[in-house]
Image (cartoon, rainbow, N blue to C red; front, top):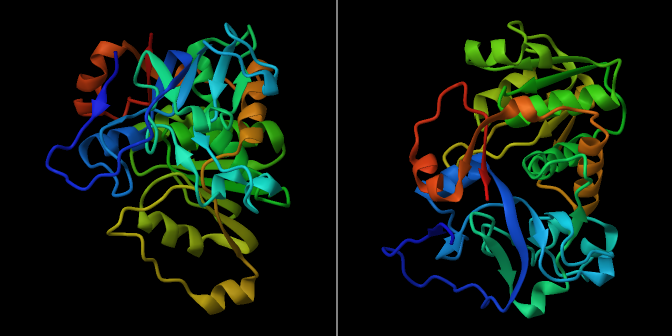
Length: 322
């Protein structure tokens, strides 16, 4: 059983490679904001039909001996397959591989009872074992947490202050992980919705904007980027963590201001396998908590109606449980 995204009105769509190897029984899959957007408006590069879902935890149905993983192991899946030989793959930056294929985008994802892939790509799959102390539902946070780990690793000097724009799942995860690695850093989290701020009070929710050494954009809003630039301290780093819509993607920067203040703009995209491993270890060691970020747990049969549901400010992570 799966939820397959189709678009019969579209033509000339490139078909995905035929699935010949089933290797993972899905036990839980998180629903990401990008899944909700793709459900209504599939991105231009997505080949259809397609099964969405990339925050995947499950049980191996085949051995992965090269990774010392075997049938029956509880694992998380790095949600991509890279070529393994380009200059990015050979320098541990496979998220930048020009031939990368993403589960739930180029390849069928986790809104299904099982994951399969062409035999040609199977050897390039990366999984990591889930410790017994981590549930399948908690393990679905490994991928979003890995994206946060990847982003904050791009900040090469511990900031005295961190400002996060966006009080959703990613913003709150960023605050919690930053607190664990930079315990003396002053962390503030901003959101345009007062209810979100109240919910995120323990994660640094603040109603006042103060300049910071590091600012992370965890919301798809170009106004947040402009506001961040105005409030970035000299020598500071602005992490462009969230993408913008196609209508907002062009932003105007003051070159001289960046030049004179020696500020750094850094793009952060996805995560690498090593980030996934670190994320599952963080969850296992209980360095951060995620249970309170789960708003709903639903069966696979309710996924369609969940994607159509109007979200409220109290909605954070919905997890499909199989």
